[in-house]
Structure formats: structure tokens, C-alpha cells
Length: 367
Image: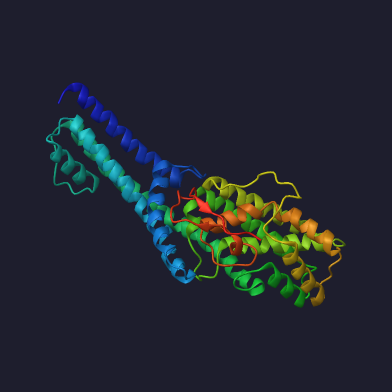
């Protein structure tokens, strides 16, 4: 092998090793959402298989059981991808350091990466490369292991709030159920704490679902629950309160809506989902006035202190809903969320292929 070819092997191998190392650091260590190519390819490959199988079934329960394995499997496959890239990277480096023939370089790289030690060398540069590969292999696996507690801690915080929502909003959750139950226990006039708590929840999921985006695909323990449909029920509830109870000031409800749609938009930005960042209050939404009027009338019949006229309330609600309408439906489609009123029941039907959030979708007929 010529000197030039050996130099090319060393450089190319070093690039592969650096690529895997930087991908691991950007995926788990850097506290912000970074679109890492290697990570995206791994999850795209896994999603292609899982979603392709899941969407062959009509029953949602079957889809949910299949997709529940997707995110954990993809997460555990990441270090495998990193180790494969490092393995071939050091194989090229060993070739450049005159470890020939090629099958001997492959065996030396495997021995070093998994610290088996059945192939050694008396050459100082080769020995140094062996030591670096051994340490790097252990380090890449350790990165994932060390971040698993953090991942599941974030998931647990999210799901505690999603589970608690069932008490008032039912299962699947809906704004109508939430507001009627609050009315029944005479709490509809005192919802400040609810909106404040959920505003903090939205801020939390924005941070966790963009810095470690795979959490967005971890499904709830119960098939009928989802963080996306929970978000939709809370936002619709806050929007109805803010638009119908005009004689009472509800700044916390308005702040909760803003916190919610900003959070959902930032998550959608990471996955490349389309939405209008500056909609007009008069832009169309997926909720019809007839649907809104049904909820409005039921609240009036239940004794809720609704003070805004029906037409004015509808216009105000639509002005709030337009801020999160499209992004909510896109996230419901992306995560294959369970059926829920005013969110996943009118979301896009996902196709089998997805680019880790950048897949092509076909739109079901919207109301």
C-alpha cells in the first residue's frame, strides 16, 4: 500500500470516528436539540419498519402495542450504530498503520473495540490506536447508560400530569368533560392553579422533547392516553374559558395557551412539521362553529357562568385556537396519538414512512 493511500485511510477513518463521537455528544450531552444526521438515520430506519408494520392494522390497540417498542428500540440501537461506525473507522486507521491484510485489521479493530484483547501489537502507533478505540467504545456505551435515568425521569414527570388529567377530563381527555366537571364541583371560577400548573408542564415538555426528542415517541402506559391529546384538551379548555367568561379576568388561562402553543411549535420545529407561525384570528381552524356551540350550550345548561354571547365567544375561541390548531394536529399525526375529541380525531393519517418527524402525510378530511 502506497504512502498516499495509507494517509487517505487514516484520514477517512479518523473522520468516521469523529463523526460517531460528535453524534453521541450532540445527541445526549449538549443540552439542546441538534439535528444529528446519524441519529436521525437510525430512528428513520427503525421508524420505517415499525410504522410500516403498525399501519397495516386497523385496530388502534394493535398499532399502539407495536409503536410502544419503537422509541426504546431505536434508543438502544443508537450505540450499536456508533460502534459500527467506530469499528470501520479504526479498521481504516489500522490499514493506514500497515496492519495488513484487511481481515487482520478487522479482527484488531473488533478486539480493541470490545476490549477482548486477543489481537495485540508491538508497534507504538498501533498500540496507541488500540487503547483509544477501547476507551472510546466503552465511553459511547456509557453515554447512553448514564442518560437513561434522565430520560425516564423526564418521561415520568410528563406522564404523571397526563395521568392526573383523567380525573377531570376523562379518558380520552376532552375540554368539554374537563369544564363540565369543574362546573359540577364549583371550580370553574377558580382555575388559576390549573392553568399555572399546566403552563409549567408545557415549558417542561418543550425542554425535554427538544433536547432529547426521542421522548416524544415514548407512549403512555395506557393506550388511550397521550401527551399530545392531553395538551390539546388543556389548551381547548383554557381557550373556552378565556373566550366565554368575559366578566372575569383569566390571565392565567391566556398565559397557559401562550405557553402551550409556543411549546408545541418549538417541538414541531425540531421535527420539521409545517404550521403557520403568524396566523390571523380569522384564519380557518379544524373546529366548526357547530361543534363549539354544542359545548357552549352544555356549559350554559350545567350552570357555568358564561357571560359572552355565543357568536362573540366563538370568534374569540377561534382566535385562540388558530395559534395551535395546525401544530397540534401535526404532532398527533407524527406520534400516532389515540383518538381524542378536537385533536387526533381530525389529524392527518400517517403514512408508513417517516423521517424521524419529517415524513410525508396525507390529510384526512377535516371538519
